[in-house]
Length: 113
Length: 112
View 1 (cartoon, rainbow over the protein chains, first blue to last red):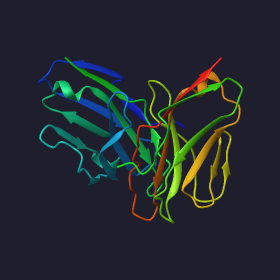
View 2 (view 1 turned 60 degrees about the vertical axis):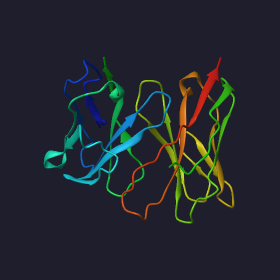
View 3 (view 1 turned 135 degrees about the horizontal axis):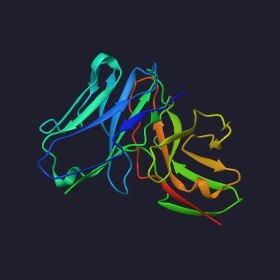
């Protein structure tokens, strides 16, 4: 069974440019998470989806970040415009509804220069 | 905020048991203890979880104290591939599909 797939694996962009990350969760998993991980820190939740509905986006900086999960499957996370402080690893995870066992992708390492 | 306290780092000799402690003194009666680990350049990986009984699977054992205020993750025969950051998380299954809240974890270094 395929795990959570994220792309790209690495991305380098100049500040003020837009960037997008893509996530394909495990088939049948209704819950999808986007986490942000800074160096030396644990992952921090950005947004959680139940099917296509964003049910927890309180930590998402909405002035520059946006996310969508069309048809309740794949999801994209976008930053526009990117700032130097956005350099981090962006992790996607999925789980069955109500489950505490989540499966994570390998993440996208973003570097903003 | 994370509800757990873990030592920032630990070393373990290869082949020996690695015992990773976690303090969760404010845990509620319906909260589970979850353990995840994150190997360098990978996403976190689920290891094990439990409520109050000790649990064992192919990866590790979880020992929860009787008062449930602390727990220990045991890797019985640590290998170099077990070098990772280990996260202890408490989570209630009764408050909807709440997200996992990660702290800084324990960085385990397995030494040859």
